[in-house]
Length: 299
Image (cartoon, rainbow, N blue to C red; front, top):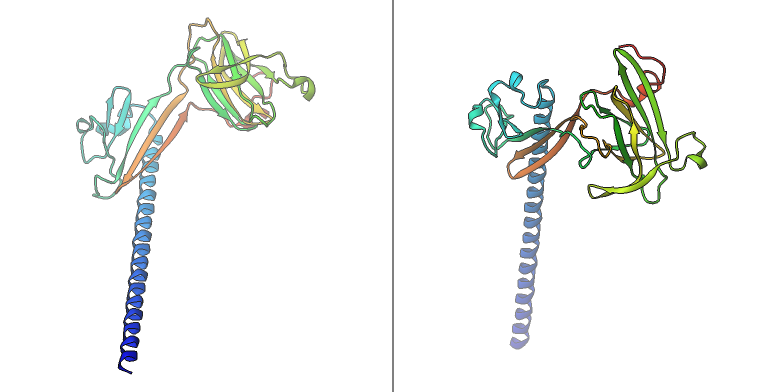
């Protein structure tokens, strides 16, 4: 009997130890999970706050009318470093804002770690080697301003929607100003014009690689004349990346088309960046069926 009792006592001790180990493991697992959840929740909250800071900064810059310097509206809260324009709150002067990081404070009497760096740059003038590039959704329109460019001939290239998708066609409306008398000239290009029977011009030039991307279709040396003030480019049958450049041999450049606003928001350890392009004024695509449908225009 004594030997059997000792054996039973040993088994009980092992069971107790196993229960303790399982309890400890369970406690550690729960604690780790709780800590991880709290950490994830904190990171998510910080990330959302950083994004809100970045968006708030962009909204404030978009509300100013004198981009990119913003001197008239931002007073001493704007500083220029080369072509980069930094914005900060009134807690510091423009003289303090001479290098990164330069924070904008969005909280009432708040923390310098809460805010955003904002840079505003002009889109450059575009030449033959650095064309104006943009993406068009199906049936969408991009307006390209030319009124200060002096460009009279253009190369225009575009891609297929996808390798398996349909070939994309383009319609181009040139808005002309002949000494105050406005008129329209329309062009339409489609590599599948014969099979689609849409009346578009199917005599396209071979595609080519431009700035590291392949463009399937091109129309080179499109003569738009010297009085064209703007182009409206529409994509049919699918979305497409489009490039517009002065034709080879043209020395004039396409003027800048707007501003690129980059805002990086900060909160705690989180950082979020957004980029917004503020274009020159243009009417939505629906106006092509009314204002730009044809006939004479009156300013």
